[in-house]
Amino acid sequence: TFCDMTTAGGGWTLVASVHENNFQQGDNPNRPDGDGTWANTVTFGDAEAAT
Image (cartoon, rainbow, N blue to C red):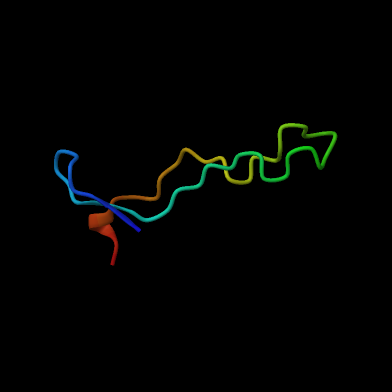
């Protein structure tokens, strides 16, 4: 866990960070760049709305 206290409006807490878009890269000749399992640009909402 990382808490950023320097960015305007901080303390922001990093909950998760996934950087691997090539989780199974090279395993499937039909998907040479990986299957995109971890590629997602959609967020699930605001922290304020979490209960």
